[in-house]
Length: 504
Image (cartoon, one colour):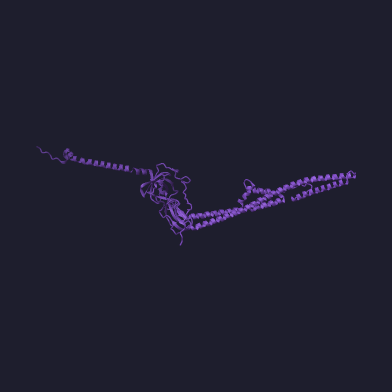
C-alpha cells in the first residue's frame, strides 16, 4: 500500500477548525451582556437623575436667579430734639421695641420751668388783651354817643327850620292884624271927626294898633333870632330861605361830626377827613360790615382796633411760645419711632446731648426687601409683579416668597460716587448688574426665621408665571405712592412726669 502523504496544518479538515473555534463563542456573548447591563445602568442613572432633578431642571428653565443678593431695610435714626442731660435709658442694642416705647429720658426740670414761664407770660398777654378791649369799648361807646349827638344836631336843624316856617306864618298873621288895626284907627278917626264916635274909642283903636305893631316886630325878631341860631343872615324878604346842605354845614352838626370822627379814629377806624360829611361818614362806617348795618359796623370796631389786634397778636404769640415750651418738654421723652430692633446705641446715662445728635438707631424687622443684582442679560424676562422664591443661606430649609417690586434707576457703577470713565484708552466690556428690589411676604417672616440686614440670599424669579400687583408687567412704576405713608406717632406727655434725680 502506498503510504499517504503527510498532512500539513493548512490542509487539515474544516471540521477540525470548527471544532477548534467553537470554544470562543461564549466570551462574545458575555461582552454583549455587559454592554446591555451598562446601558441599563446608565439609563437607570439618567432616569433617576431626570426624576430627582426634574425640579432643578424646571427651575433652570423657568426662573432667573443670582447669588449677588442681600437683605436690606430702612434704618431710622433716633436723635435728640432738645439738648440736655440724659437721666435714663430703657433699651440697649439688639433689644426689640414697639412704636411708642420710651427709649430714653432727658432732664425735664429746665423745660418744666420754661413751661411755667410761658404760661405766666400768656396770662399777662390775656390781661393786656382784656384791658385793650375795655378801652376800645369805651371809645366805641363815645363814638356811638357822638354819632347820636350828630343825628340830634341834624334833627335840631330840621326842627328850627320848621319853627321858622311856623314863625313866618305867625308873622303874616300879625301883619294882617296890624293892617286891620290901622283900618280900625282910620275908621275911628273919621267917625270922631263926624262926632259919630267918642274920643275914647279912637284911643282904644290906637292902642290896638300899637299892640299889633309890636307883635309884628316881635314875630320878625323871633324869626331873625331863630335864623341866627342856625347861622343864617336876616332875610326879611324870604325868612324861610336856607341852604340845601344846612343839615351838614350847621355848626352843631359839624361839632358832633368832628367828635364822632375823633372817637372812631381813637378806636382805630380809618376815617377820611377831607370833605367829611355826615353822609360820607356813615358810608365809611357801614363799609366795615359786609351787610352795611351801622350797629354791626360799630361792633366790629372792637375786633379791628389796632390796640386790640396788637394785644391779640401778643396773646397768640404767648400761646405759641407756651406750645413750643410744652413741645420741648415732651421732646425730653424720646420714643421709638417704629417697630424694630435697637442698634448703634451711642449714648449713656449722664451724657449731655445736643440737638440733632444721633443717639441710637432702630431697624425694622418687617419692612424688609431683597436687593438682587441681576446681570443685564437676565433682565429681558423679568417684570414688576413676577413671583419670587428666595432661599437664605442662614435658613437653607426654608423658602421665602415675594414679588418683584421695581428696578433701580441705574447700575451700580453709574450710581457710584466716582463713576468710571471709558471715553479714552482700552475698553473691556463688562456685563453690568442692575439692582432689582424684591419685596418679601411678611407672612413668611416668623420669629423663628427672622431676616437680618446683610444676609446673603438667592432669589429665583419665576418669569414664566403671570405677574400680579398694581404695576404688573411693567418695568417702570406709575407716578404716585405705592403704599400707605409711613408715619411716626409722638405720644402725649405722660401725666405723671418723672422728675430728675436729686442732686447731692
